[in-house]
Each structure stands twice: as C-alpha cells, then as structure tokens.
Length: 266
Image (spheres, rainbow, N blue to C red):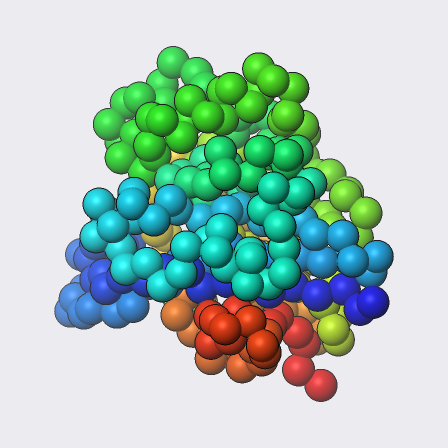
C-alpha cells in the first residue's frame, strides 16, 4: 500500500496572541483571538503497519482545562479501523498532557521518545510550576511505570524507524522531537509542538511555553530547511490552518471532517 499520514483533529479551543506567544507585547501589535486545534497523527507504512505520533489528551482532562473535545482519541482510532489494544508503537513527541493523555488506554504499545524527554519528566524538576502547568501528574506516573515495565525505547539525536525518521530538537520541552514520514507525493515534516502555529516560523515568534529559547529558534531554522524541497510539506502541531492547507479527508469513518489526509499537492 502507499504510505499515508492522517492528522486527527480531536479538540479545539479559542486562544489569543497574547496568551499563546512569548512576550507578545514586544511585537507592538494588537491582541486578537484565534482558534487553536489539537491533533495526533496516524502513520501507516507501506506494509500497513501503524505508528501513532502522540495520543492526545484524555477527554475529561481536556474538558477540565476548557478544551472542546471533538472526538475521544481512542474512539477516533476505532473509527479508523485501528484496535487501540493492539497498537504496537507510539512515538511521543513530548510529555505534555495533550500528547500523552491516553497512554494507559494503549497498553500494548512500545513507547518511543528521546532520552532527554523521559529523563526530564521523570526527574526532580518536572513538578516545578513553570513546567508542571502543561502536564498531569498522573500521566507522568503512567510514563514512569511504562519505563519501569520496559515499554519505552529512547534515543538521542536521530532515529530511523523503517520509513519514519525521528529528530530531536528540544526547545518547547527539553527533548521535543519531530518526525518525517512518507506521504503521497513526497514527505511530511510532522512538527508536533516544535511548531504550534505556522506563524511561529513565518514571523519568527516563539510559543510561550519554552524550555530552551535558543533551541526553539534552532528548531524553526531546521523545520524551514526540512520543508524547503517542493516534495516536502510542513505540518504544524496546533494550527487550524492545517485543515485548509490539506483539504483531503478520510472518507467513511463517521468523523470524516476530523481526519485530515496529509499529502503533497501535485
């Protein structure tokens, strides 16, 4: 089969520029409201194997944080014909609540993440307020148990998983990663939260949650380089424009409008 990637839009909220961008006041522009979407990504290889990039927030946690739940991520997998109990691999871009919220509902999966990300979020500083506000303590405990159970594979730098390539960039979190995956017409650069919104790269405006600002800027530069070839497309992690840039959908799922087919336009 042809390799494919789907971005599953499972949640949304309304935010503002001042709330979302680091030191918005330095740009001298008025504030405004805009939509922020929440995605996880389903990567199918040429043999039909499924890898998840992240697994979304747990619905009750999302509602408590005033996010609108469009579909339970686990239900979305069922709609895509994927049995959550048999998912073999989840790549964790980073350990914030909206990216690891359903790990305990995918019990058979090997978890792949950077060594630095796992080390930090199971280490002594994870509970400090400026880091902890983007996490859930119970979910970090699930991550620690997965480590203790031998379910987690870690790496540093770059890792090839068949047709999928993972690259450590840091910045937003200590060990944030991005992924490159084949799609119809070329390759997708799946930025996850190394690029929440396209405007971060296009206007050089970092997101407000940052562990290492220099690494975040370097990540923007790398994403720009990776997405430069005509047969590569850049997929931001939270931008409502993803659905407009990639108009294809997965038909027949019952949540067709939420399952965005990532491909390179001819």
